[in-house]
Length: 402
Image (cartoon, rainbow, N blue to C red; front, side, top):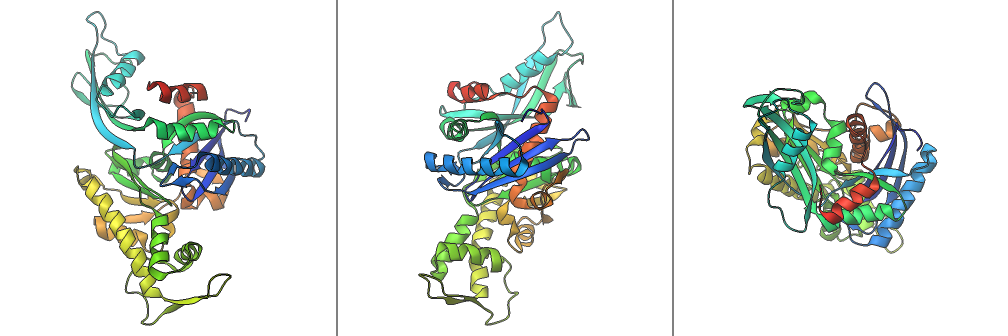
């Protein structure tokens, strides 16, 4: 990875480990050079529970990505998820000294630090402070205050934080390979970089990233993130419901969910059956299609209604002019967009990464939205500032400084 244009995104998911190698283009797009995958073991609900096993899986995915892209990987951007992640909105404020009235970069850093001067749990660390809007002497809608004249600088931020030790586990897992960590990024924030356009963010949009173990989300209103979080529910819970409800092995339940499942009810002919052929240790079975769909429907409805209740704690659902955008592996389930539209009473669609080129199969697969989004996030970071190297990131979560 000698070229500064090469970037790597790593998602340590509950169902799979995904590594995407991308190249930044001068026109702002990203070319995907290779995608490495490995089945995920040692990860539950988006968090590492067996360090050694998870590390081996990450290594397998990295080697696969290196072989497919013909690139030696030395550093990565890492996605993090988990129900321990929390967020809130807060305003920072700084007053310029009397002998100066021009706002500079240090003032912007100071107002960000001021916004973080709030009480969070002692075991937590700040993950992101994302600017919403600046205000200069009461003037709203300021995009970049540097160089402007003023005495009072205020800024609204969306702040994401989570348990330091759980974030450390993902960093350590990569460090042991050994690879550098350029940055750690909330999964849904990464996905939003490639599934939403600027216009959709301005109109107001909710991104729901449904994976194997978690459902992550970010809500944009007026171009800024207003709400974000993670539910510890995903596609694996549906598979478990099918396995328990139909009394079939988990592997069979997963295959049945993917190949035959739908969350739409009432579309089957009466008596429509699915034949599960016999296999070693499995005698075979006939499953009523409507029963399968009912199991899937009930779990997804419960998940989406839980998400809606959480979002209803604030009023931003009323500002989603762009609608709902669903991505992640679980989004491939037939009818999920229809069900989400019914529950939220808003237009909903399943989406994948855009503004990318290269491997079409990867770009057009919602399973890779987070990992590809990490590449887009990295592109923005490298354009705006010098990337933070591993030592700084790793130290940050041990010292609590960010």
